[in-house]
Amino acid sequence: MNSARHFQTLMGDGCLHVRAIMAVILLASVFPVDLFPNAPHEIQGADGQYSGKQGQVLLVQVRAGSRAADVTGRFLGRTIPFFTAPDGRSDMVVGLLGIDMQDKPGMHELMVEVHKRDATRRLSYNVLVLKETYPIQHLTLPSEKVDLDEENLVRVKTEQERVKTVLQGVSRERYWDGPFVEPVQGEVAGAFGRTRVINGQARSPHNGEDISAPLGTPVVAMNDGIARLTVDHFFSGKGVFVDHGLGLYSMYFHLSEVLVQDGEAVKQGQAIGRVGATGRATGPHLHLGVRLNGARVNPYSLVNLPLNDVQQVAR
Ligand SMILES: [Zn+2]
Image (cartoon, rainbow, N blue to C red):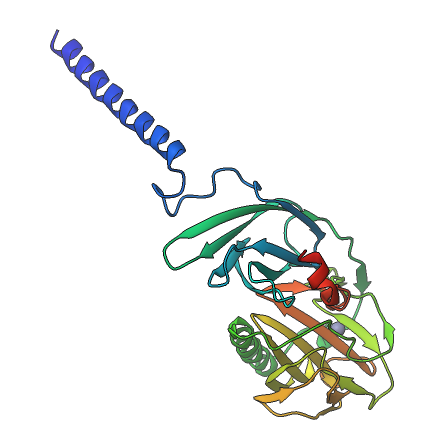
């Protein structure tokens, strides 16, 4: 008898609990945003859809509804800053979304928060990531050419840490304006995303594009920015990292000569270095990389972005 009553009490508590949950669910459906300010958007993808391949840059446009709005997006754990469309329309904001070369194909959510003085509005977009096919290259090399000695291992690690820190910096100002240009005219290898399998061991994918050009050819900045870091690194040789603002960086490696200094403002088309074969390079070429809010993207996707047409696209 005792145990039966005990059981009933438990059931009673349980039912109360269920009723409380039901009440919360009902309230939540009536006040979806205000009740749970940190809850995910009600219906994923309700505000639109985008699609692109791995390594692609997407132009995303959001109607913010007011000039004073501060708009930020989140995509696969990365922050996407938005800026006012250059057509002067006050309520449209634009963001560059980078799909990393190794983002998982499939549907992912781009969550956008529109912050105004007194309220935050949440928007949800579906982003369909399509698989890109990357070349695989098998190489057999003598191991002394592949394995680094202790000293170089330490050097490479230090250099990687430095680069990582610099690329994590997000300048709040947008320095670039209009379309991005090719930094050098030459033979494009199509090496973005290529995986090298050396002596049976897969290396990390090639995160930029290689452009062959004669030794000494001027390399120009893809757009306005700040030469955030100049280096002479073990793998990349002499290089320049240009900060275009809002988390966008272009990188120029294997240069024979660097023509700018750390912190120097650069203009689109300005020579910032010369083609070379410094670092680990088999011949003169430019390794061009682009990092967008942490995503490794194809530099030519940035070049091909219709940024002149932002006005039209923004409606
Ligand atoms: Zn390369």
